[in-house]
Length: 311
Image (cartoon, rainbow, N blue to C red; front, side, top):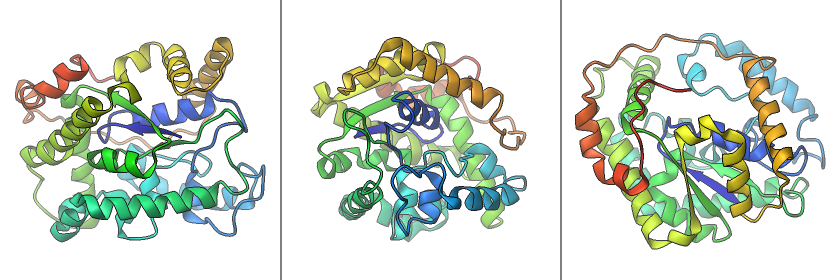
């Protein structure tokens, strides 16, 4: 298993997809969006892309996406990898945890490591079920990600001891901009409320997961693979190749480059694009202050300033 760990809104969806597709069609395994919405009956062997539910759920998703700013920010097609929290069969995965700031008691529930352990034990059962007929091919890996669970990465690793953790690092200032807009849209979608203070977002969505990543990396230094966001964008093929090799996946470099290039070309061209919504400026977010608050994280992982947003 490969587990991608990061801040929310830091580019983990891209890395998740690349690690999945780079291993080769039919070899790697990820938990797909349509499986989270219709997991049973279990998909027949070799039918993850052709099961009738892929088309049915895809059509349903397409009917709602044009009216949803949230869908635009994190668009996942029916046949694409989804975050593990959407496979939780309890309150752990409600709305992808995106409305926890509106429900204080539930937010406390999510922060409790004992509740996280229960959620991950249940997730392990779900993963085993999903892989009954469609496991990864021999030598390939199941690729998971859920940045919402980064504060509990140590607990996740205890429950999934075979998982290799890949940490993706991005300039916290750019992460905060995207987080602020996402929470603004959540408020507009679910209720009318004042904007969430940037201070609260920094503390709960940056400082807490940053501390968890630093503690985990310090305790298990040889087990963690660190990746910088700008390196992933500059050299996606070589970065993904190096990650897979570090995880024990036998890969041929040129093949990985071709698969990564093919996926990125589809993203830019043939793949239907999600709707675009204008993100407001965030002049109120003081970049030096944000980076000062996250200075230890930035120094620990060598995170560079992202002068202009890169996607």
